[in-house]
Length: 69
Image 1 (tube, rainbow, N blue to C red):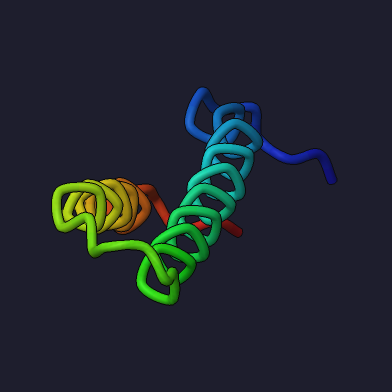
Image 2 (cartoon, one colour):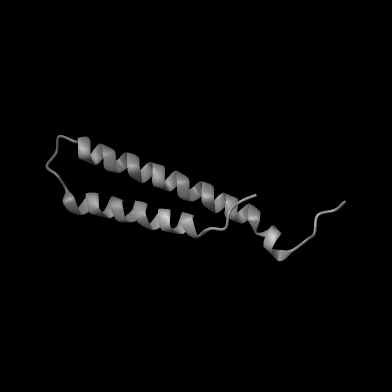
């Protein structure tokens, strides 16, 4: 039996690649935020807020992606 060839199923590979990219970026930004918090340097609140916003926006994008099969 062959699988139906719908436009929707054709885009799932791209969705999975985007999902992996977003997860990788979230992880990287969380590590950078943790490193910034642990630093002995004076606290850079604007940079911390930037990382938090980057993480939040990518989590929002990730939540809006269709579920993968």
